[in-house]
Length: 410
Image (cartoon, rainbow, N blue to C red; front, side, top):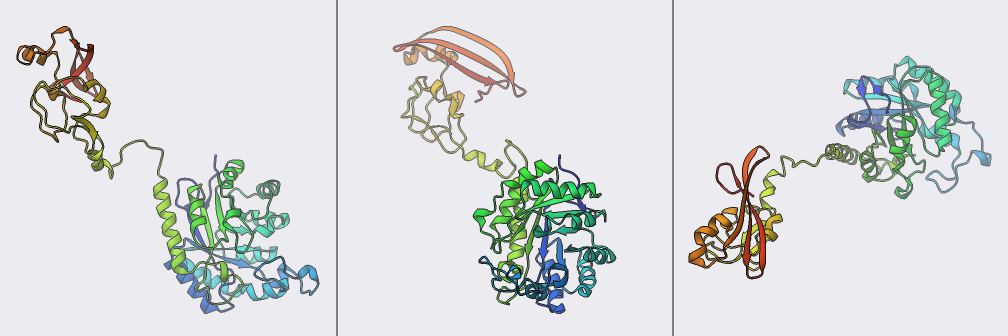
C-alpha cells in the first residue's frame, strides 16, 4: 500500500493529479531578473511547483585542477573543473526567499535541493514545504538524516542508484524520522537517452517501498514523462528555461515554456484517459452503437421465400436483429414481402404459428410439434416457441422470442 504524501496540504500519489515541478537549476544565468521571469513563466506553463538548488561551489567540492576534479566521459561539461562549473551554476542564497515569495503569491510551491547541512539550516529559515535529495547525494546518508529530521516531506531522486542503495537511503530517512517519502526514477545522464529510462521500474519501485514514485527527467522533449504518468508516476520534474538559445550549463536539456505547458497538458490528458477498469458503453460512444452490424434483408423477398446467405446478411447499421441469430434464421421463411434494405425483425421470420396460417397457400411443411414457455429477460416478459418442422432436407429445430407486449424481440 502506498503511504501518504502531501506538500502544502496537497495530496500526491495514486488517484491524485500528478505534481509537476519546474526545475530552475542554473538557467537563471546568475541574473535575478531572469530568475524572476522563470518563476512567472513556470506559472504560465502550468507548473505546480518551482524547485531550486541550494549550494555553493565550496559546499559541493574544492577548488582543484587535479584530474579527479575535471569533468569527462562525454558530458556537456567535459574539460571543466567541478568548482568552476558549480560556481557558474549555483543559485545565490539571498535570491531564494524572494523567489519563494513570488512563487507562493502565484499559487505555486517552491522547495529546494540542499547539498549540505548548512543549506538545510538556511532552507528551514524560509520554511520550504519539502526537500529533494539529488541523485548524486543519495549515498550521502548523513545529509539524508539531517533532512529527515526536519519532518518535512522528502523526495529522493534515484539516478545511478542500485536497489540496495535506494533501500539504504529510504531506511536511513525513515529511521531519522521521515514519515513522508517519495522516490523519483531518474537517469543521471545529461541528456538521458530514452532507451535507457526503464520506466517500467516505476510501479515496481512503488510496490517495493510503499511510497509514491515519480520521474526526474533529463531526456529531450516530452514523450518520456507522459509515458511515465501512464505507468503510475505521481510527480514529474523537468528542467525549465526561457530559451535553449541562451547558453547555460543546463539549457540544452531543458524545456522552454511552450514545451513545458504542452507536457503538462499531455499529462492531464493522460490522467483522464487512464480512467478506471470498465467494460461499460460510455456516454460518448452510445450514439455509435447504431452503426454496429446487424441482420438486414439485402434482396427483395416474397412472403414464404426462404432466407439464404444471398438475401440476408450481417451489415452495418445496427437496426436489425443481432448477428448471433443468422444461423437460426437461414432456411426459415419470410412471413411477408420484404423490400431490400429492411432491418430484419422476428416478425419477418416464419414460425409454426404463421406456418399453420400459410400452410395451404404456400405449400409449406406441416409442424410436427409446438411447445411454448414463458419467462423474463432483463425485466421484460417474453414467450418462446420451439418448433420442429419437417423439410425436404430434414427436421429443423428453431426458436422465436416475442416480447410481452406481443411484438417479437431480438
